[in-house]
Amino acid sequence: MHKNDTRLFSPRDIPLALVLLTRLPQPRLPDEVFARQAQAVWAFPLAGLIVGLLAGLVGWVAFGAGLPPWGTATLIAATLTIVTGAMHEDGLADTADGLWGGYAAERRLEIMKDSHIGTFGVLALVFSQFLRVAAIVALLTGGGLAGLVAAAVVSRAMMPPVMAGLPNARGAGLSHRVGTPPGSAVIAGLVLACCLGVVLAGWPAIAATLCAGLSAVAVAAIAKAKIGGQTGDILGATQQVSEIVFLLVLAAAV
Image (cartoon, rainbow, N blue to C red; front, side, top):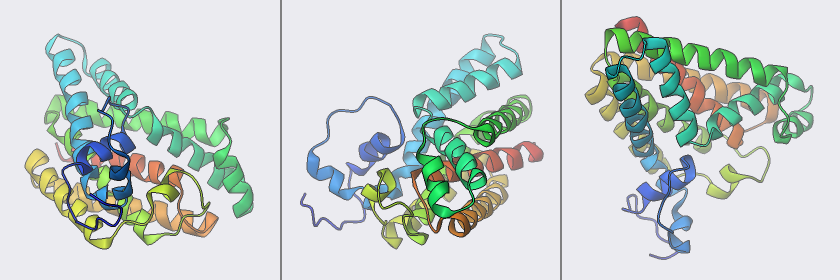
């Protein structure tokens, strides 16, 4: 494999996606693998599949052991956060603080980079976690946890289109280093996510995926208007918002 590797798929794209999107321990990857970061976005849904399966396993064990639905759902949400190192939640909080806490693009980007959390960030985390837990409770009591796994898959397929469709607003950070993914990898990831979503959650996953996609478009449009593009924080917010929307649609369908 060389730095000019332009293959659509590579077996090492999956561990690379896990390195980029989770804190799961991975064997050390050769340096040249990281030259495929932009191409590897097709595997983001597979990283979501692994994250969702781990959280679902924790929930299945807890619920089977007699933990009440709200306790089980909270444990599932905690597992999702731990496995990913809270990177997406951090992005959501930074996005809320920055986009609504500043009056100019430069100031908004400064706020988003600041490690301190503000009122908008706190509220975004509180409301998002409450909505996530409430939706998972509905799935636990009415439809099982396959929908949770589907949400983890589909929401991670929503980030690459934003990466491809918007310029990097900061010119630095993880999303800048990854680069602009090729359209073929973006489409492959979306198709893979849609197929896995239907397999896992049935036909309601189609409506849930469409709604999740619309929410991702909304996040991207707001980011474009307020800071002129995307950052890693915007991508994290995209994942969080689309995941919650997907879960809520499925919860309404059970």
